[in-house]
Length: 307
Length: 244
Image 1 (tube, one colour):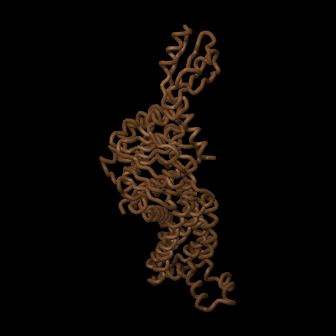
Image 2 (image 1 turned 45 degrees about the vertical axis):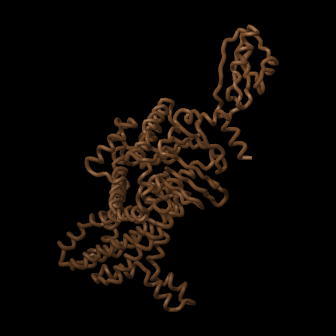
Image 3 (image 1 turned 90 degrees about the vertical axis):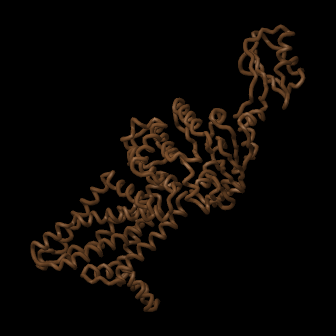
């Protein structure tokens, strides 16, 4: 379990993290969201013992990061933002260094290096020096060092930033594979990632927590939650749709004869819309019910907090 | 403590991973030869000792040692790898000391490669090999002092060039603190006690004593304390500056 209590970090000019508190339980994959400069990286730096908080505390599996720093750090695998490595080392040399720091020696060390490299598909470049690798490979080296000691807690700061779609997919699969019985915290500003891998999402803005829930719960906060989008062959009757019970409003889309009917919070309007279509005998080319738009929720929440 | 040796090994290896190590060693050997034979008048003196060799070491180190030390922390901060290093389960003591020891051993290797001097002087006459040994010991200790200063300056500056310049300036002050150049600035107003204290900080007087074959415990203690103090300062600076 990770527990963050009233964590605050003030720099000379501004407050980066402002009285933040939350807990993460075993088995959770927490998506840590927020616009750039919201305090995501600062929070992670405090959680891993790199920065000392101005006030408040954080503990990892019961070890206070300030008082029992080494014990806490032993539990953590951390990928810092931008995946910094020692460029002049070979991939194997670097991973062996990490393995030795983590206390592995001899055959066990070599085996840990090979298995971590295999998990992120680094086998082909083991003997290359890190600075000659592409961005995607460098990121994978960073991931390999984070998972090498099979940590109970994995903290990844923007693990898929700068990767191509295939590599992103790979990293997400890897995270899902690792997540069982562990605690994973991923910071990101890519929202599809949250729906894809996270069991829970925390949104922060201006250093403060603005939302905490499952991706589904967050989506349902969207004004597009349960909205129905229709594409008709001919013009549709906006007024009739707007008059249906539970409808909050009708929006015109860019496409011709396409409307999005918004539901009032908690209302389900799909059947009513369907009924109306049958009554009027409209010919409908497409019909869609939305779960909600995470990016819209994100924008509303983070913009509200910034003001 | 086990981690200290891991840090040490990586750091020492990284010196030899780039041409830097070889360039440094070649420059050091060439310059120490030039100084000994041309400026020091090794042959003209007609004496079988290595004092012309050792006499120039403080000045040689003034520029060469900061070049080894400048990358110790500045590079970590510039590339961001300091965040990786400081979130690994190692103590600050292990990180600071491991890095320093690697640089110190590297300087020791360069120093040992001047061994043809010993052979030459033994071939030409009957030198006092005890004095030569203490000369090497003193030189290595002094290199450690310069390195500890350089390590602290490297932690202070993100830019390696600035780290180099800062280290040269501070090291220079430690070399000349026994000279009238510095003492005159204080002699007008400071009590004799302060003057003595400043003069006793000088690398030169300490090193000269050791390199003449006189091992005084106080001189050894001076260098060891100096190294420890600058490394402690390095640890503090690393902590303050790591996130900048």
